[in-house]
Image (tube, rainbow, N blue to C red):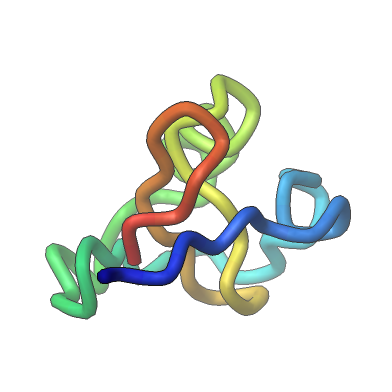
Length: 67
């Protein structure tokens, strides 16, 4: 059984993204290392992703991390 991870409050804050190019992760696989900061902020704001670090985001579905 896979453990569910609900991101912490800070991880849903798009202001935590601090680089111009952002890595995008899904299920432990990096989909891109070149996503723009603006696109990453949009994904976090819309609840599609959460902040892993200032330079990486991971996919999220219904508030649960898939990265």
